[in-house]
Length: 281
Image (tube, rainbow, N blue to C red):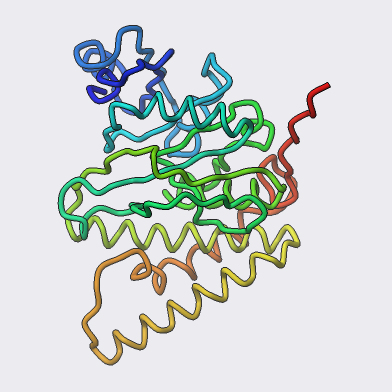
């Protein structure tokens, strides 16, 4: 919150979606947050439903999103505004730099070069702690699939895949920067990476159930990677703790979850297509 207070220009509006004790959070936000910050109580649990709530209640057509374990650079709002004007109706994401030991900070992106993912199918294109979202188009696409909330992962991959599958614009712009802080223990990281694997398994099952065979290449890639990791473990080859390390345990469980619970027919299924922006008259 303090990093948002230091942004120049300042944000036009700040919404904080609160799980747990909203009164305590409101008191904290009142001390350190930007003036006028609103705390919204969220009765559910999970990143997808939290993000949907904040985006849905936002008063402005472009919404920037970050997470509570991140701080933003002082130019974050200004850069987001400039990029949103330059690329209207696009989802934008940017660098997520590790703050602390890089080996203990998950889901970072440090690439210094811009990349336009439009026309590609890349589930890993979007970084949910650093997003600029066109509110109406994102909500018209169904927003983030809240069925991923029990898994704690891959809701960002699912939105990116659906968005790009619909032919809409998604760009990575390194000028948009947040810092992701080191706070997890090694055991917590290991559990998180299993959650990543579960989320990806559910993602693949969901889209295969919807009849989208294009997702199969990503599933095959991760199955091969899981088998490589299992082989190394059987041979007792030392390996690093990173997100693929959770694939052997998480991917099969996620596939079962997705096959059982993510059938077509919901607002978030694989057939959903975001409403295309109208051409100017």
